[in-house]
Image (cartoon, rainbow, N blue to C red; front, side, top):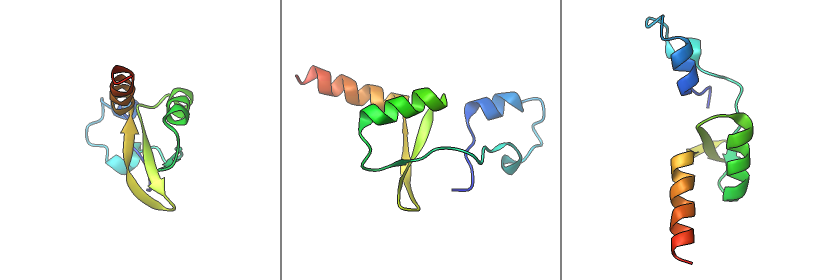
Length: 81
């Protein structure tokens, strides 16, 4: 993964629509391993103040998890208890 574009990057640069993705993407970001516990993901999202975190295995991108995914997971888990 070379970089990520977060909503804040787009909003910050909204006045210049001719910018390229590579010009606004954030190159310094955290990832999580697929075996990370949901609680740790919540902590990282809160700490990093991002809406999502890429999920990796080794150096391979598997996907991303966001607060909507986590909220749905928690809701399903608490409703089945």
